[in-house]
Amino acid sequence: MREVFKNKYLARNFFGAVALLLIVLVLLRKYVLTDYLDAEPIGWAMLIAGLSEKVLVSVVVAVGLALVLWYLIPSEEDTEQIQIVSSDNGGVSKRLREEMRSSRSWRYSGGTGTFLSAVTLPVLAGEAHKREQRTEVEAMIIDPREDSLCEQYALYRAGVKSAKHDAPWTKDHVKNQLLATVIATYVIQNASHYCHFKIRLKNHLSRFRYDMGDSRLFITTESPDTPALTARSGEHYYNSYKEDLQWSFEHADELPSEAPAVIVAEALKKAEDVEDRHIKPILVALGLEGAVPEADYPKVATLVRESRNRYE
Image 1: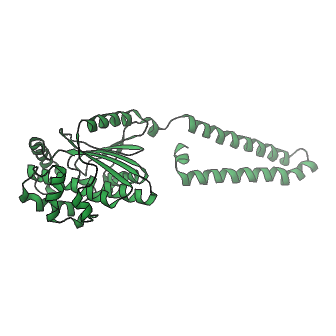
Image 2: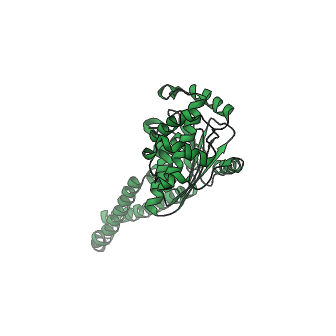
Image 3: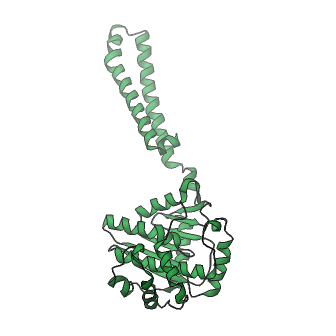
């Protein structure tokens, strides 16, 4: 019965059938059996009339009791504070997109932020534009100036099963990808009037990626083949992780909220617009020019232009 009530299509059919049955019973009792009862007080007419009345009362009581139990008894899903989202057929990416479309705030903490720049920020910016309402985004990635952290993260990513489909994971590649994420974020913000981004650089590592919307938290790993964990707003784990993320944000370095002047002056509003020549002035404005040698700037520009979704 709970499965019927949870499914809108089944619930509509169920209540429609019950309503139709009640109408038939009422009409049968009032317009059909009444004539027989007046003419023949005892017999089949009386028996059918009595049964129809009892069935009518039983149906009403049964449906009413089922509704009461449905509201009072929590379902298995309601009692599970942490749930699993399958990675089959891009399931994790689909659920994340659903949450993005309904959220007006977003918090992220992860590694290089490839999914952040390729999917999360463009979707959030697009939805904010449709609603014409401001969306606040706080994102935290590894500090590209921290050589030891970038090297450790490169070793970790090189050992992930999906690494064979990526570019070789080295310390330099991690740094380039981090800078590409930062630049892509400012470019997306420059194109959006309703999305406001805050980017922070952290000095610690985690194997997990946290995406927190208004109603759900998603915890994923760097492997697109791994299921995600999710918790709903208002539950213990959602609130606990929210506090933990807030604490981490407060202890990370925050980059300027305004886009570097060259992004505004050149009207860079799409990742494809970023050229090699733009990288140096952008990084200088952000104080990140020393994170990688200038010889790597073209690689950074390429990563900005070629951002992709690894979870589909």
